[in-house]
Length: 425
Image (cartoon, rainbow, N blue to C red; front, side):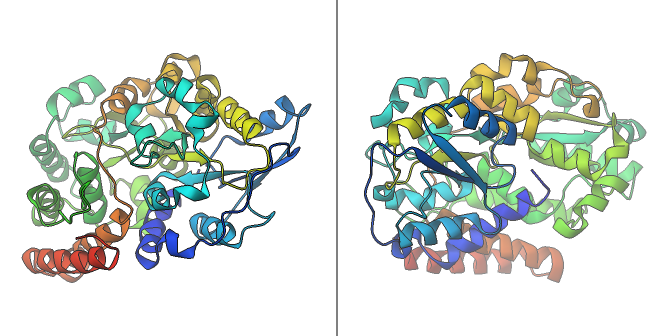
């Protein structure tokens, strides 16, 4: 997993805005039940390479598993390959969480995992995560790999300098709401003027959206991007600008911002811990994490799926069930910072050991409860595309000084047009 994982999320939104998956797909191919050579597609950091390697050995008596780490725009390559059909279609494929909604209308391109046994083990995995890979009539397209429960990372040395609490439990008690967050952020910025609590407006907007139970399109396929829940998320993001607490940090400047203290706070998912450690190895012991103000949210996390052309569905399902059982899920956290979708993994030593980079803190104490409390929200196939203009207009406020009200009106207008083009009423 790399810093570029954030770029994956942005690239996904742009891809979804450009074209729908349904139109790109052609023939559905056919299924052979006795294939001995199976292929697996995933992206760098999408699975534990060690677990995948062990899966090859574990199933070697029955099949030959060839795993490929696919670079570039994974979704587009998968869509193109599925549309072309034939032997190049992988038997097992990863699907990024932010892309799953766009694959739901093309459910016929994938096997229903419930028919292969997922319904018998579904209770082992978080219900809200499982639901995001279900069709309206209950077909299960994706097997959860990981999730991205969010938290508030913070620098203990800078918090101490600002007179703020440094113990995670005390920080959690003081910073429960977004109003609490603004108060603590202002105190930090006054004491350490170079340090800001917010990375940028679009990222904060996405986090607040992910804390809610409604997004941009409802389950009746109606546009709701002009309603109060979106405006409240917008206002929360804009407040960081108007209060002078926005660090205006983008992907290109993020590593330096973490290393130099421009960001004394970083709001992000569990997998973000590795990003921080890689960006600032010299700050070992100076970061901690507390619960997210305003409540838990999810950011990221992916699935494994079986395309309709899978040459041995029963064996392929056995493989993904093994790769993603709770024990191997926990290994994924150790190897690649993939936070398990199976809560049973949260009690295993791989998850409960203190993290030296975070001063020995057991970060599972923050992310475990958050994972199990993330609200269920409906994510429409058009969601990522409809969301894109809000992020763009927030960027215009941040970088070009555009009026927040004018930016809001433009964002809603553009989002409505995109929604209509994608069949949303």
